[in-house]
Amino acid sequence: MPTEDSLDLTAKHWQDCTDVYEFLDRIRLRPGAWLSGGSLRDLQSMLIGYQAALGVHSIDEPCDFWHGGAFSQWLGARLGGTSPLGWAADIERNTPAGSTPVEEFFRLLDAYRSEAAHASATTRFPGIEFMINTFVTLFWRKRLLAQAAERLEDCGFRVIRLEAGPWNTEQDMHRAMAAALDFPDYYGHNLDALNDCLGDVACHGGYDDAPEGTGLVLVFTDYDRFAATCPRAAQVVLDIIADQARQAAVLQRRFFSLVHSNDATITFEPVGAMPVMWNSDEWLDANRH
Image (cartoon, rainbow, N blue to C red; front, side, top):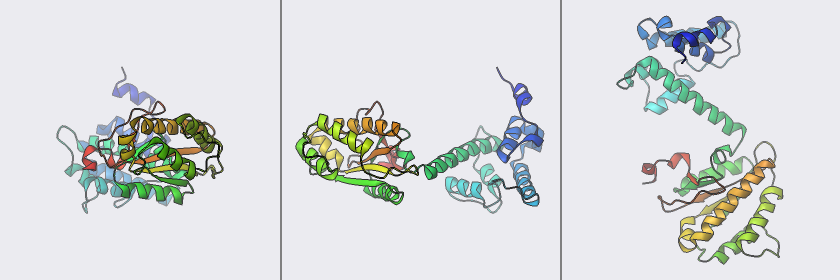
């Protein structure tokens, strides 16, 4: 089993570290050797010195640990405010029982890096947040749904909006889908035909699917009402979307669905062998009440 000493044997010498995070990983291995008395404020001073050295030597390397810098701003949003003494004092003040400020710093650092990486991926690949875990994402607040749809349109996605509330029968759904997606006249108005025609649209349709992130998005509102009147059809429609979205992804085309429900507790069976999940802003039940 690895120990602190055995990890140290494979760690880089501090002079060989290529960025601030490798340097911090070195400190993480032996905090007692770097920080006298485990002082987080010593670490803050050390990182300010590191960033100053980058400037002196004209080294272009991101380093987010200035007071008021990106890490401080992220931490302030997470903790609900910052102090004039900097992020070290904020972490010390909010360190939970059973932990130390240094341990808490590295836990928060991991969270910060993870969120920054996710934000970077979202910027580089628009819509990826709605395709990582599932191709069908639930929304309860229409405001959040509208904002998501507008962001996707701004990125060049073709967004098709469908009001599912008035659908009292499966045929109502078929008529609306056929009209919105311009299905051919021979469309059979049944679930097998929907699978075929939606596959043609998703995988071979005329929408712009440029590599920078555009694609096709189906946005359903009041879908819980359709699910109440036609539960099987409502489930199968989402399953078809997920299946075709996965096939579209293989062809490097983006296709997925955002689904609004007035019922904050609604659930669906897994679709396309993937779960239907709530969006990240409403993941917790408490955020939908």
